[in-house]
Amino acid sequence: MKILLIGATGGIGSRILNEALTRGHAVTAMARNTQTIAKREGLKIVQADVTDVASVAQLATGHDAMVSATSPRSKGGKEQYLATIHAVLQVAKKAKIPYVLFVGGAGSLEIEPGKRVLDTLLDKLPKERLEEPIVVVQARDVVFASDVAWTFLSPAGQIAPGERTGRYRLGGMQPVKDAEGQSRISNEDYAVAVLDELEHPVHKGRQFNVGY
Image 1 (cartoon, rainbow, N blue to C red):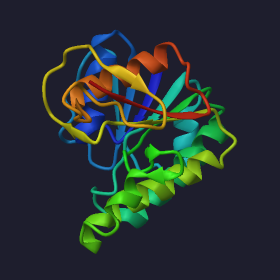
Image 2 (cartoon, rainbow, N blue to C red; image 1 turned 135 degrees about the horizontal axis):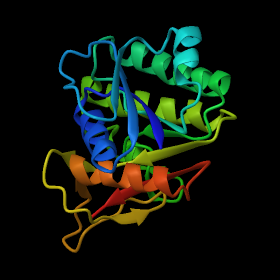
Image 3 (cartoon, helix red, strand yellow; image 1 turned 180 degrees about the vertical axis):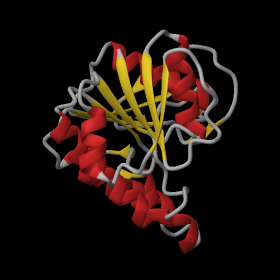
């Protein structure tokens, strides 16, 4: 496959990049600062901002899939993050990308029908810690309202650097939990799930989550 990866330098994006290249895919890795991306076979490195929709759409044309791995933690914060989500959708439409996968968050998953994980945090966390999950839920709603072929992949409640086991379990709108009742996954196995979905898409137009 020929994959355009937006946000290739982040904690999740860098793992997706490595997983895709390891599997032999051709990747165009795009970021506003590409200095930390090492040259590798099958990799094209592009320093650009996806909000320059016209230029990026020209670059994106001919790719089989697009992955948006940006985060509200990056420079520019939540405003830049939402602008990036809107721009990714515009680029996908202009470039006629067949499939766009968005790296999401766990806040929009449901503890039970109609009750989101985010709802359980509103009276538990200080305002500044709520800003990130709130803006990711807002981004999800933007994606849901679009008319491109998308998937929104939420991680488990706990996601961090760790081991690549190649194993995970799939869930829908309720978080996947392990035998101890923990919702967790490593960055590396999340990236495995991203590539599995890109290679064999079964969640187009849907949100799903992965965990151990």
